[in-house]
Each structure stands twice: as C-alpha cells, then as structure tokens.
Length: 235
Image (cartoon, rainbow, N blue to C red; front, side):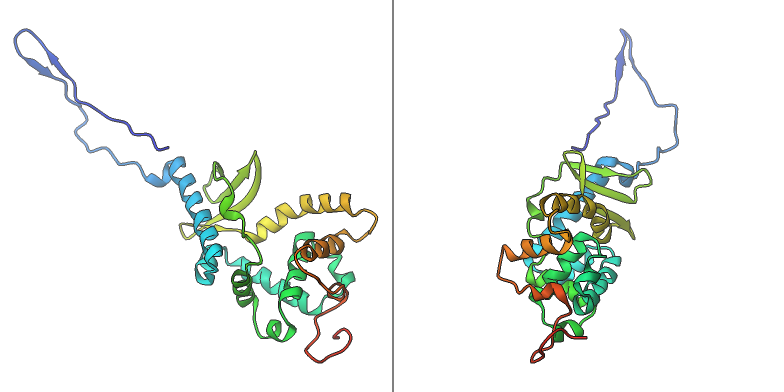
C-alpha cells in the first residue's frame, strides 16, 4: 500500500504577533520519480501478471503475445521442430518441461498444421487451445521480488519463485524461457521419484500427465508426427 505523507504548515504564536517559520530553501524541490518507488514497481509487476492471465483466460493471442518476452517465440519454434522430428531417444535429451510441451503439441496439432506455422503462430495456437497457464489467475500476487537494477522480477509463493519477468522498453513481460529453465529441474526431480523404475522419466511422466485428460497413442513418444494417410513414423 502506497504511503501518503501529509505536510502541514506551522504557525508559532506570540503574545504580540504571529511568527511564520519559512523554509529557507527557495528553490523548488525535485519531485520523486514514481518508478523509483519499489511499491509502485511491485504493483506494475502484478498488473503485468494479471494482464497475461486475463489474456490467457480470454484466449486473446495478441494480448498474450504482447505480454511475453520475444525469446518466447524462438523457444516455441524449437518446440515445433521437435514435435515434428524428434524421436523418443532425442526427447530424452530435452529438459522435462519442454518434453511435456512437445507431447502436448503432438497430441493436439496435426503435422500439416505444424509445418504451416512458425514459433509465433504455434504460441498463438497454444493460447487459443488453452494449452498452458489456465490457473495463473488463481495465484496469489503477494510476494513480488525485484532485483536491484530493476530489470528482473519474480512472483514467489512461500518464498519460492514461480513466475519470472523481465522489464523491456519500460514494460514488465513474462519470461517463459527463463521459467522453463528455472522450474524444470525441480519438476523433473519429482517425476524421477515417481517413475524411477521406468528409467525415462521425462517421456513417461509427460505422457501420463497428458493421458490423465484424454486417451493418447503411445506412438507420440516414439517418433515424429505422421501426415494424414501415412503409415509408420515419418522420416
């Protein structure tokens, strides 16, 4: 909550006449820049998260794209290529969160459509289909951390970062690639505890997470997507 400081004038009265205490500094005092107030910046971070969550809730692709760092679209291009080409063995070399996203893309989007888009358009499809971030609007926004230069921010839950942001051109934007890098190892560690016997926690757990919502063919793990009418895995 922003603090408000009220300054009042002081009048000292004597028996004969009032004495007015004046400020000897006749130069106007510089006004504080609101951006220097940490509470103002923290609220700006909250606004950015709310706007992103609202864009996802409305499936508003333009608003969502404007709320994320530009690196997001390069990351989605990597996801698109992997969804088209990566074998199961190759997926095991990816980070866990990315594998989950690749398998979601394979389960939702056909090969012909994937070949016709780029990373930015795949991001648009993910927003339209509601493939991620559906519960972001339910997260409490109490714990906001901003680094000393004022360019990196985090939303924390019980002290642990869960959302990363970067300030670009004076505006806070969601940093999805950084979130993947930072959150992935912890999520994968939990998966390995649960699926240690499988030996391939990334793909096993990812398939289970998606399969909890709908039936999936195990073949989405074992190779690239097929064009309609093809048999077997595409080269």
